[in-house]
Image (cartoon, rainbow, N blue to C red):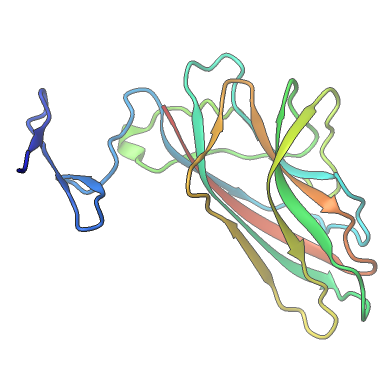
Length: 205
């Protein structure tokens, strides 16, 4: 037995592919009537200091407390490259993504989100996005669960680069007033300094 799903107002048919994924004629997810699909990218101009302490916030974005939508984070990409090499046998640091709420981090460079479907551009409710190579101010911010974590390698011989991609099977859901931050979780390696860039993907509806 088979069935065809047809939009009542659009008259567009839907199908299921061989991997059991629902597909519409255009092959793209439906654009929300209120919301959309967004990215933000950045990277502080400064250099992250050697031996940076644990629990320092380097990037943060917060969903507007008055939003009537939810935000669904689907991917986060982090790339770092050393500016000063680390010491042989140095202890690698760790970086992670952590939830927060209650207040908005401040003090960094503000970034602007990009709507992927520009012809359908709807302003994002992710109204506060910033990064800083030293430490964002997190007064009154309440940090919650850690979502993901990665070690940051120690470069001792050549100035290569390191990439970490977090792409969950289910989006990270942010309700109104919730945020997500990139933070050091274990102190960074002694002597090694570094720079970084990131890109975050999410949708709102």
